[in-house]
Image (cartoon, rainbow, N blue to C red; front, side):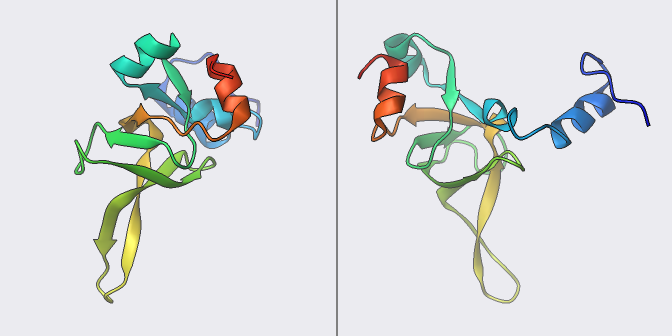
Length: 122
């Protein structure tokens, strides 16, 4: 089968490219919009999502919920946020994955010195 065209406008081809993205492209797909206050403070529109960032859910069943990021899954492009859980039929409580495109960062985790340098705070 021939390689798919990366510049295609077809949704099916776009989905194919996302699902089969190489490992070195996945971190770029994990970028999340910053809140308006953080945008003006740091002079950038988005930043890669990390554990410890406080996010707000912008779409879906949990719209408006804020919480800290517990974990991220870059291959599936989802994040797990504290407080977003569901009770299963067998009684177990499980975390609900949220697509990173549906999140907005409202507070950054600046424990990492490299992240501070990238934002100009180092």
